[in-house]
Amino acid sequence: MVPLPPLAEQRRIVAKVDELMALMDALETQLATARTTAEKLLEAAVAELTATPRHASQEVLLAAEAPAAYGDRPRKRTAIPA
Image (cartoon, rainbow, N blue to C red; front, side):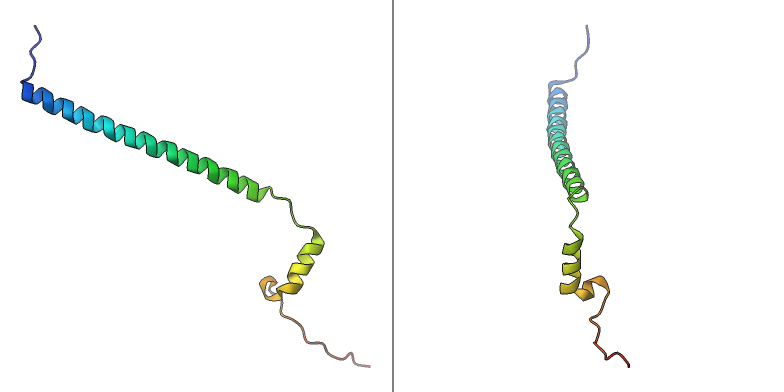
Protein backbone atom coordinates (compact mmCIF):
# COMPACT_ATOMS: atom_id res chain seq x y z
CA MET A 1 0.00 0.00 0.00
CA VAL A 2 1.19 3.50 -0.92
CA PRO A 3 0.73 6.09 1.79
CA LEU A 4 -1.25 9.14 0.70
CA PRO A 5 -0.85 12.61 2.16
CA PRO A 6 -3.71 13.99 4.19
CA LEU A 7 -6.70 15.30 2.22
CA ALA A 8 -5.85 18.95 2.99
CA GLU A 9 -2.33 18.41 1.58
CA GLN A 10 -3.74 16.75 -1.55
CA ARG A 11 -6.04 19.74 -2.11
CA ARG A 12 -3.11 22.13 -1.67
CA ILE A 13 -1.09 20.16 -4.25
CA VAL A 14 -3.98 20.16 -6.73
CA ALA A 15 -4.48 23.92 -6.24
CA LYS A 16 -0.77 24.55 -6.87
CA VAL A 17 -0.80 22.35 -10.01
CA ASP A 18 -3.88 24.22 -11.28
CA GLU A 19 -2.15 27.56 -10.63
CA LEU A 20 0.96 26.44 -12.52
CA MET A 21 -1.10 25.07 -15.41
CA ALA A 22 -2.90 28.43 -15.72
CA LEU A 23 0.50 30.15 -15.77
CA MET A 24 1.66 27.77 -18.50
CA ASP A 25 -1.45 28.58 -20.57
CA ALA A 26 -0.81 32.32 -20.21
CA LEU A 27 2.85 31.90 -21.18
CA GLU A 28 1.93 29.81 -24.23
CA THR A 29 -0.49 32.57 -25.32
CA GLN A 30 2.20 35.24 -24.84
CA LEU A 31 4.68 33.15 -26.80
CA ALA A 32 2.24 32.68 -29.68
CA THR A 33 1.56 36.43 -29.74
CA ALA A 34 5.29 37.21 -29.68
CA ARG A 35 5.93 34.80 -32.55
CA THR A 36 3.14 36.36 -34.62
CA THR A 37 4.47 39.84 -33.91
CA ALA A 38 8.01 38.80 -34.82
CA GLU A 39 6.79 37.25 -38.06
CA LYS A 40 4.91 40.42 -39.02
CA LEU A 41 7.93 42.56 -38.13
CA LEU A 42 10.19 40.38 -40.26
CA GLU A 43 7.77 40.57 -43.19
CA ALA A 44 7.60 44.36 -42.87
CA ALA A 45 11.39 44.66 -42.72
CA VAL A 46 11.85 42.44 -45.77
CA ALA A 47 9.19 44.42 -47.66
CA GLU A 48 10.93 47.68 -46.74
CA LEU A 49 14.35 46.41 -47.76
CA THR A 50 13.17 44.89 -51.02
CA ALA A 51 10.90 47.75 -52.08
CA THR A 52 11.39 48.96 -55.64
CA PRO A 53 13.94 51.76 -55.59
CA ARG A 54 12.85 55.14 -56.88
CA HIS A 55 13.84 56.22 -60.33
CA ALA A 56 16.83 58.58 -60.45
CA SER A 57 14.69 61.46 -61.76
CA GLN A 58 12.46 61.15 -58.68
CA GLU A 59 15.53 61.47 -56.47
CA VAL A 60 16.59 64.63 -58.32
CA LEU A 61 13.13 66.14 -57.85
CA LEU A 62 13.15 65.28 -54.17
CA ALA A 63 16.61 66.82 -53.77
CA ALA A 64 15.44 70.03 -55.45
CA GLU A 65 12.36 70.25 -53.21
CA ALA A 66 14.25 69.73 -49.94
CA PRO A 67 17.91 70.65 -50.39
CA ALA A 68 18.57 70.84 -46.63
CA ALA A 69 17.57 67.20 -46.27
CA TYR A 70 20.42 66.26 -48.58
CA GLY A 71 23.02 68.39 -46.81
CA ASP A 72 22.97 70.97 -49.55
CA ARG A 73 22.07 74.63 -49.19
CA PRO A 74 20.50 76.62 -52.00
CA ARG A 75 23.30 78.48 -53.73
CA LYS A 76 23.21 82.16 -54.59
CA ARG A 77 23.60 82.92 -58.25
CA THR A 78 26.57 85.09 -58.96
CA ALA A 79 27.59 86.78 -62.12
CA ILE A 80 30.30 85.05 -64.06
CA PRO A 81 33.36 87.30 -64.30
CA ALA A 82 34.14 88.41 -67.83
